[in-house]
Length: 147
Image 1 (spheres, rainbow, N blue to C red):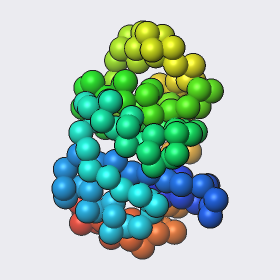
Image 2: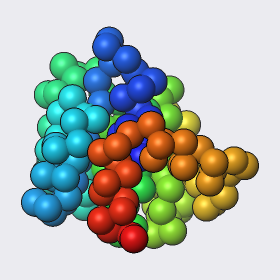
Image 3: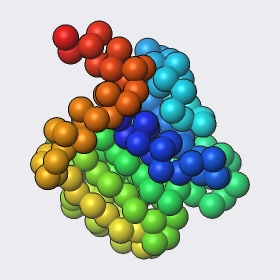
């Protein structure tokens, strides 16, 4: 949710933010927030299905940046396939296999730049709190989920 919010701020009116969630509840939550231009429900372990969906939604251009923060294994190829050559795939999940991501990208001839998140970024707490201050919708959900 935080990534969708920040992505929408950064792409402005000319960019497109696509959110993909697996469960109906998560899909509806993202739709209700309104931070994504398009929200789809699909399982991340279905790379070809999601590739075809993103290809259609982007008119074949694919994603400039893909952020995968799902704590479920076997999401690597989905993220790689959905990202254009020279695009960025940011894996931020402890379930991510670097071996699957790098060898998978090599195997399909995908030249993406991969970033593996390690759980810490300078200023992350302040940044997150600022996001929650800016967005009453995000704050409400976080309070419902974690308060």
